[in-house]
View 1 (tube, rainbow, N blue to C red):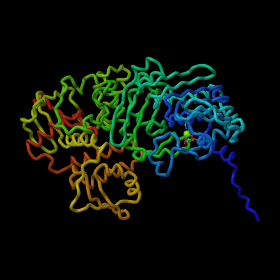
View 2: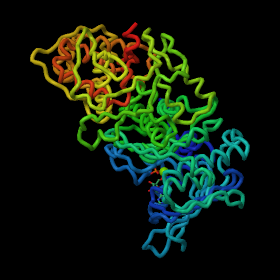
View 3: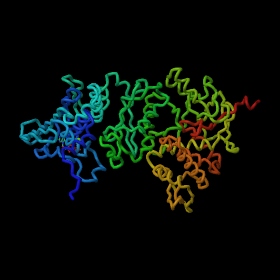
Length: 605
Ligand code: ADP
Ligand code: MG
């Protein structure tokens, strides 16, 4: 008996494949322009009629194709960009599936004209529904021109599914922008129904963004530029005042490829927290650079979704980079009011040597301005004095004031903590319990030194943590810890970050043996530390992007529990000196008050 299974004829297979790659006219534009860029074109003209239904023509001055390749390029899985499977992990080109031209040719009428640099004659091919109608030499300019007529002419279901011309053309415009931005050095034009829509000259990114929007845009762009070992982030964010009512202008690229990722888009959004009017969205043009081996662009056929290996770290880095960019340009209060929620990427930590902390005191800085309502308990502390620095309006300020609350029931003096600590070296400190007491201008200053230590360690580690693992130290006697099954699973799923923290471990079933710990952690702090880590990982409501912050916080806390933290006066003065070297020295990273002045008047009473 004969089998009933048959191979699909090529043109049917191509049509089916086309359904995945070519959803609408804009997909054709995207695929063809990407091919032109891959072919090294420096000038690309795009001519559209009827939102691409009747004509899409792309003319480039790239490398062109040989006579042989001109025919070959319409075969399915025909690509010049991927030679073996290994190449998939170091892709630098846009295409690699070899599906676009085969798909397009299956569902439209195509005319290809192409010529290579040293050839006298080029090639002209006409193909319709995968059927080659004409293939002849022709004199044509160096480069490639592809004319796509009557898209979906043989797939009525698809054709009927298309939206109005204005909607379809909007899609084309979006694709155009997604290519024009990363390839600002390429000259690009777009025509629709005889009308010139864009004429873009080669330029830098800033100019290209302005060209795609309007001239006023130039003042609204804030540069972002951060390079770490894991990811580079370059580009621009748009000042919060120019935020839009829709998410339109949000562009993320990785290695110059546009992608969408709600998680990482959220990282940018978060960096704008408190700066936007409700219901508005930030605009941004951010370009990530990642080792191509560490991303998977192959997860979606149209390649707008990308999987990152180090997603969580990247989240935090993006968020910090954007936040710092906004801060640097005085869009944000100069003092980071939300420090405990973000990585603080000191500008120096990447290349520069570690600096002795300097004491920087802003005499005008009064965190306890009497205008600000008294803290109420239960809400996280966020520094709010900076409102005035940023020139925010009253309405904004009011909403920020809610953040000015601390967990401590301690009532903070409205009297200035006037930090007369220019010279801390020769001060005497009295150690009592967890407190250091010393004289201050207006009375007696008490410093909760464990909290101070927590702040110092946190600030130092957070900067380092992003780019390199925290210094770690092997133990003479490995530490054993028995986990529950779910704890082990969650531990392993955070392995990358945990290693970054300086932990080295092995599992035997649910039994974990720790062989190295962060050097800052005293051995007797291990149980508390692991317990804190586990609790945080198990907490569902914790924002994934914040986990790094929580890890470092736990480490700082555990480190500050060290039994003999203060051993001498010198020791104490070093600690206080480092504390005043921290940008935030009044509150610990977990929001607890570190220091307080008891005034002479209060002492008197
Ligand atoms: P892919 O881009 O995934 O390789 P395509 O179907 O888009 O697959 O293109 C197939 C091949 O045709 C490409 O690999 C390239 O060699 C060639 N090609 C397509 N467009 C152009 C162009 N504009 N200029 C030069 N070569 C091209
Ligand atoms: Mg392609």
